[in-house]
Image 1: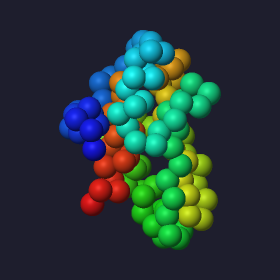
Image 2: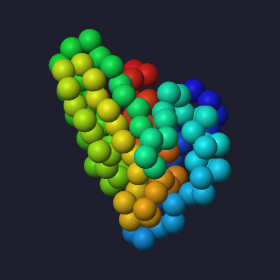
Image 3: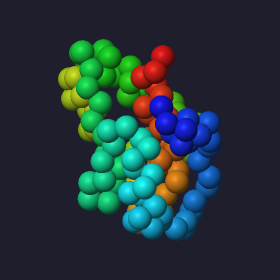
Image 4: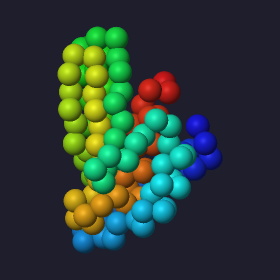
Length: 112
């Protein structure tokens, strides 16, 4: 995990009602610090692969807990052995630091 990714995991989301999206150059720079996340249609996107449905749902439930705690919720597409996670900040109409914080926390769930 890079220094920035470790820093992001340790941080918490800030309330951002009506916040401002990060500039595209900042998003692209920060994207290099979180492993295997992509910028697709203005969202941070990653598909996590698992052995079976049980592991997939365990990840989804853990991510739901993190999302609730941070009050920042992704869009999820769940199938038998995959979960696609999309982060963007609707209030900011783009990607904010909160999206990077939560993306790093999603990755960290699989480190245990």
